[in-house]
Image (cartoon, rainbow, N blue to C red):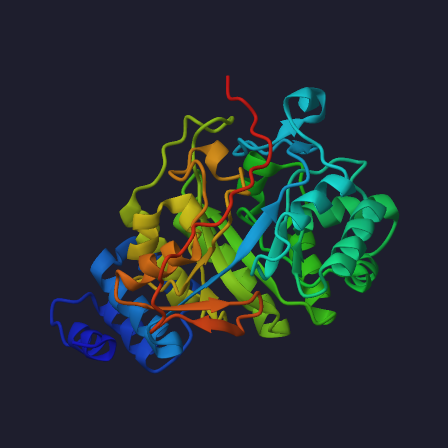
Length: 399
């Protein structure tokens, strides 16, 4: 049976809960799921049911296409003025001797290591420190673009921008416009965590508020930038908090249309102040991806970071609404691995990513940051492929 037949068969099941049947019918009719129905999906939706609905939407939008890109990360520092309880990556200012702080020359050295390599994107995010200010990033963006004009700069989250613009006495719009003129192309989705103020106060009380996070994205959209959005799930939040988070994003997307991708991020419980909180199961991971695909009807893409959830779970997620598994990474990120992700040295060659996608019957598409097709790998045969070089950022020894 194809995805449509499976959904029609599901609806004909006489034992199906009436509310779940009604939601399934709304999916077929392309009618929006309400907040209360989103909570029902979490509370009553079994894995198989959610998978049928989410895969139906995924295949209606994208068929078997599964996207990835060739990218690398620069994490300029893991020193941070903020004290997020779930973060194993950062070190407070008073602990800066345990971390790293790159200068612009050091960041350019990382960029130059990819000269001649077919990467399309540099993803920049990290901690927040006073000296990495507006001028610091303006200088880097200009130098990066001068060196490699074709490289898409996806840089920094509202957490960094809120601090930087406040320090520079600029509005969110003014700051983003200036950095866009310096070379900034788009913005990743980090720092969203959970928008509910009570939960946010407990896990990340000193960083920007939900309203500030959303406004920075809105201003980026008004400048023509595309951005992503995330949600940190599986810690102390309840299902209604997840739905509230997605609903706020959905409302902004209705207004601006500037979001490309929604990325649920799994809470990992090693090396930080919330290590006593257990992680959710793989089944809950898949349920969460599925609910996100069903609820986020105005987002084109749902992404699973393979480096965070493991390659096997990433493959499974492709049957639960996910159509993007991120990029090759080249072992240039420590944010996930330091919190206990399965991938402690996250990097895959293009061939490995393509085969991971093919092995579950999906169609691998290399994209650029804006989802333009770079290479269709449906019929590409790899011969004598050489695994690319790997370049690591400094690793903080865990004690």
